[in-house]
Structures are given as structure tokens and as C-alpha cells.
Image (cartoon, rainbow, N blue to C red):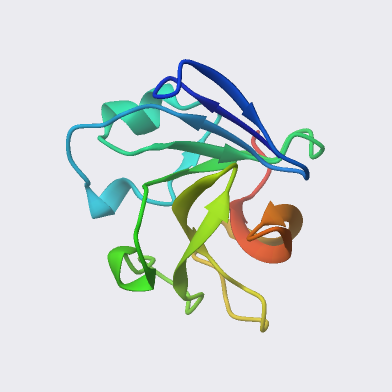
Length: 131
């Protein structure tokens, strides 16, 4: 896993398969959490931490996320029953939507197995492939 962060002034490296482009935001709008993204800029403009991407899945878009200190800090999705959880991705604690037990992802998202979440593999909700 690689985490690109403007906070730390460069790249931090860890093993696995997710990329996080992190940018400091000034507020935490729940409505933008888990929205589709291709880079961190739109997420940062909405006040979120960054965009979580899967580098080995061409065409798969990432999702905007925010930092967290526990599951209760993560907003619920607008649709679906995938529970929000706080997980370590790229060395940062971030909000994700878990579909580990076949939960339904929000409309427009699909359950995707990825590595690099809490030091192992996980099934998370990611936006469907872009047009």
C-alpha cells in the first residue's frame, strides 16, 4: 500500500494494494464521504482527507474519505446496509464501507476485495468503473 499525503510532505510506503491521496481539509461534510473520485483534489475541496484508489484495478474509481478515531466517527452511507468502519489504509485511520459479510453497497458502488486494509485483505464498497 502506498499513501501519498501532503501532510507528511511526500510518500509513505507500506505493503499491499491501496493508494490514498491525502490532503488536509477544513471541515467534515458527511454528504461527500464515499463519493466517487479519481484524485484527492475534489475530496479536499469538500473538506475530506483524500481519495482511496485501487492501483491494480484500471477503470475502478476511488472514493472520498475522511480520517477517523473509531467506527462511530464514520458517516453512514446514503443507501445500502454496508456498515461504516474506521480502518487503517496507507498508514492512516480512514472511514470505509465494509461489505465483508455480503452487505449491500450504496447505489452505484460494488463490493471489491482489496489488500492493505488493517494489514490484510478486506471487502470494501468502491464506485463502479467510470464511463
